Length: 315
Image (cartoon, rainbow, N blue to C red; front, side, top):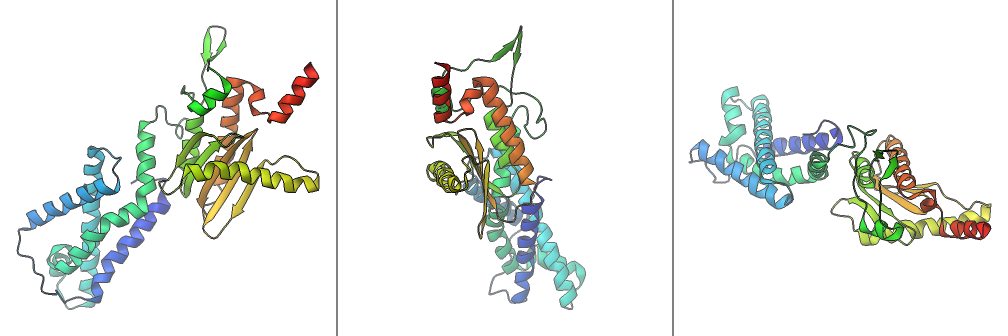
């Protein structure tokens, strides 16, 4: 559905191929099930089923998109039926026309098997992609398409409370607008394989986030701060006190922790995500840092102890 998400689409195609070939195991047994309804009503029922199933699996999507995705799922199921019919033609002494007819509709066990499981396979393969697509449609302007252009959005209440009331930066009579923190976070989250991105301050308070449903911000927020503090203490043994980035590869995850002054940018991705993710992290880091410096000044990025020493020296 979205050209940049080739990994998710490839997974959907492979799982769909699985749905197409499994019915070959029990063909030609029909288990006492026969088709006696008009094909029009069967296809109509199939479309309604896809709409209801996708409505349950993607409750945040509007009805117009659900109708579009239901019809796309229907076309994909017809394609799987044709693939199944082609295998019938190759493996059994059946005419090609009859084989395709059996594959699309007339072999009801395969029809039920494919129709009942396909919405859940779509959810498994394209769940995050559909959410990202919906979010991208709502962004004006799109951060992906116009990374260098400007937007004007307010930060989270947590950040506003800490730094005071926001005011646009003025140059003469012109107002300078910057890429917002939310744009930078979404830009990073939309990369294929990324499960979640969260920006927290030194107290573990969430400034901005974009997370998959399986991730809990209450667990991730203190994780980044605590993880940086522990590793900072260990680095002091090597006479190093500042951490710019920490990367960890586990069995399933690729965890990136990036320091932006006293803020922590935590990115969780699939372990097999390609190395180009590092470029996005660096770009998001630069834009978040630039945004904070322009809007609140460089002091916002200094650790509390450094600001305290600076104040003493100026006294």
